[in-house]
Length: 99
Image 1 (cartoon, rainbow, N blue to C red):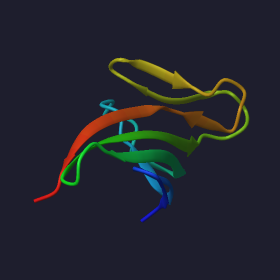
Image 2 (cartoon, helix red, strand yellow):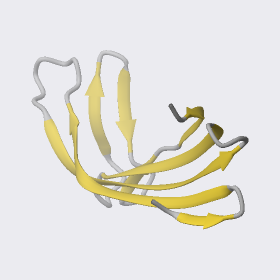
Image 3 (tube, rainbow, N blue to C red):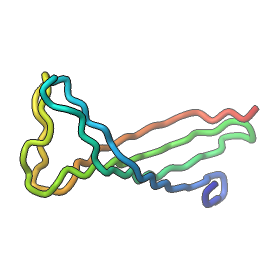
């Protein structure tokens, strides 16, 4: 579902949940953090049965506000840069085929 304009359907999404961190370091246990994901996207119809889908998602995970080391593992440590959360970005493009 979304907002239809001409041959394009625009949509947004919001997900709430948790993110599990489990570094490869045996001394540290797993850690669960609050997270959410906001998304924007569009489906564009080329023909009645063929189209394109574009989507951008922005996952955010709560890390705390002190900017200290969060998780360390075999590949290094992840730090918060003085903020409350860790932002990421995901961009995808796909083909829509209606059968």
